Image (tube, rainbow, N blue to C red; front, side, top):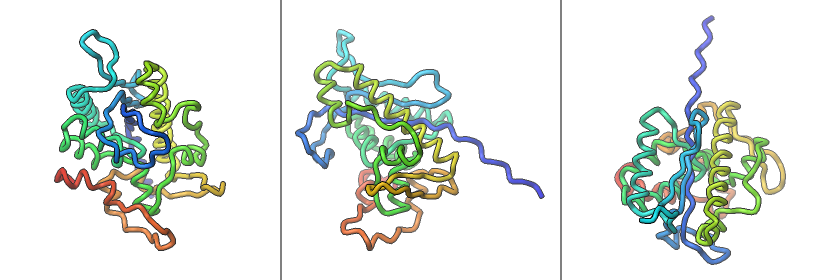
Length: 247
């Protein structure tokens, strides 16, 4: 009997941004404080020699406090060009945050919405499959991958950038994106996502078809969330792309 050919390995391009606005401690809804600005962003693929880095420069070629709309628009064009070359853009919450913020900062809402629905947002796939969210750190622990960089966080990064600690923030962003890429590839290779729960137990989610794009994940049946007091709705993540007339 003929054995079905194994599907070719996808060329994942992991992507992440860091925002510019310094917020008070304990803020839970960062998007409520927009516009947030973007200080820098990174994209990494295993077949690219170096990470792609984006950040702004002023008229004296000094690193700027945040990227201009023109800087952000060029980044959108770069991402579109890379996906056109066959890369699959992959994020952890890119639909609900990174590409949403980028759409506002670049004024390229339609272009960012198209990137969003066609890319793999692993967190959105989890939400559509399980009905709840989980952290990148817990997913890394479940897949036995090294976690996020100690001593830096997304909440601290804007303050560090404002203080001129640009290289530390860039290094943090690169490390975060490397973790995203490793997670995407490890899960796709094993055809499952494993994560550590708040109680310390190990749970698994099958990925028989690999990671789904946002558009594909939207077609999954809505899971039973009757056990949850306040389940996060898909629409909260999709609203901005629907407003753009894409999804």
